[in-house]
Length: 155
Image (tube, rainbow, N blue to C red; front, top):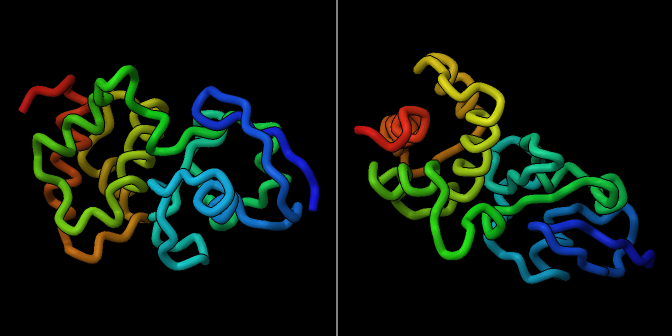
């Protein structure tokens, strides 16, 4: 076991874990941040997406050692003082969730997309969000939510 100091959602957190343990496992089971979901464990579904230094990564494929020097943002770290981000609010407004399992990964991925490209085309939204799996099939509402967030919340 190695002690790591992680910068998670703006706070320094100490954790002891094997260096090769996945960031997903550390977040969920050692730091109790359960918004990041385990889906496939292979980086294919996107349920575990977090931001590392503002870029979207599948936390199941990143070791805690590799994340130790990065600013880590989980779904829990997006809202500020009880106020949802425009992306989070757009997901609510568009009803872009059904069971909700994929929602945190979708929101984190969409947040990264809009940071990189504040005015994406629908094709760019679809291409970027395509790597995140929604088992309920709410893709049209997810795309509408990302488009709404890009438009500043306007329908």
